[in-house]
Image (cartoon, rainbow, N blue to C red):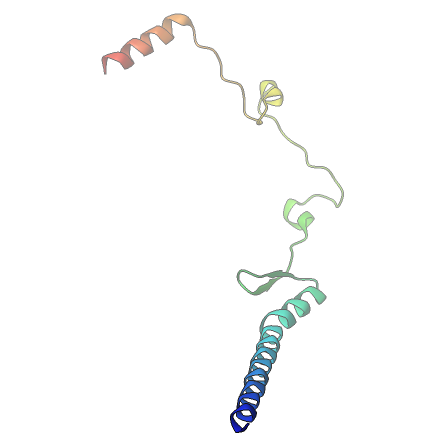
Length: 109
């Protein structure tokens, strides 16, 4: 009987210890991670989990010097570039004589 009481007391103490360690872990996590994130977002900042840093967003019209809501104007270098799928101009086909000479010079190297 005496060993049963000691076993029950030991299990109670282990459970209490696990509960205390888990509670302290939750409090430390909240103090180091959650509270700074909430403060940052409450002040209108952007929180980075990777760097644990609060950054202030930059208002885009300040950088682009456009009025708010004004669309971006794309200045195409040529009319061919407007039709390209990725925005770059299409390659110009070379005459057959010049392409044959470049392939012959490449083969001799």
